[in-house]
Length: 308
Ligand code: MTE
Image 1 (cartoon, rainbow, N blue to C red):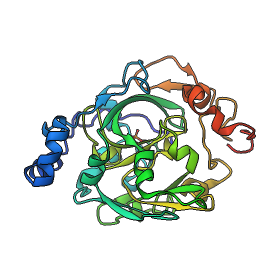
Image 2 (cartoon, rainbow, N blue to C red; image 1 turned 90 degrees about the horizontal axis):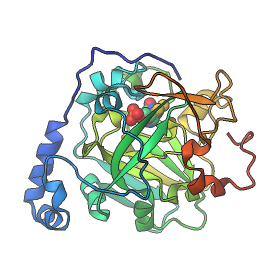
Image 3 (cartoon, helix red, strand yellow; image 1 turned 30 degrees about the vertical axis):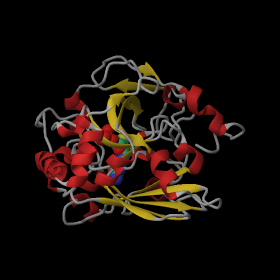
């Protein structure tokens, strides 16, 4: 991955207005009215969710401006400023995720269906990028497990593959060969079912900005940021370990697990410390990004030097 400095010439707030307006239209329908009664919070322009403090860090969130202007989203280019500048033309409605493969009930979920599955939760997570920077982000979403329980993975399903949109019309980076498109990521089924694993629809109390992976992305806080695939269109339950976009690009540097691990250096740089965006002094990186109590047992007996 390329390391770039944040640009200071970016617009501070990009609000996906048309998305809010269409949501308002949806709320005027019968389904919308029912939804409104169930979850009055989504009537507001903002996308609200109750704070789940059990899963949230009490650390100060990174400013909204940094969260939404310093991004990696290579479908729009490799500069940190490319996503906010170029992602606004991505059409995120209508949008659906097809959930298929080794499941008992394959199904396509529209974004509106996802919101109906469970009340949205606010989860403030530490996020650590493999490049050595980190942020604290207040996400809004639902556990991925809630979605997977709907389709019922079959016994043979061992992994979950996530496939992002790859539309050359609206995503200029897809014309470059920096990655083999579409962006593909993967988790083991038990990792996908872990309660921390989130399908995010929003951040900072609003609909997910396009540069952050609208309308729906994965968030896996104990893994390096690249595991958290953006703008997902397909989820497949499979038997074999998915060949991810970063493994295809450089399997020597980017392993399947990609758990945050200060003891395993990236071949070209140390992973022992990180720079929290907005801070000057570096911090020590924690095993599993500070989520060891919740997730370390998933890897009991696994050689983390080998399965990096
Ligand atoms: N998902 C897709 N589809 N394409 C990408 O280039 N970049 C990854 C991840 N998800 C990426 C992606 C990387 S490297 C990081 S660090 C995070 O998204 C960044 O998410 P953020 O911009 O919301 O902080």
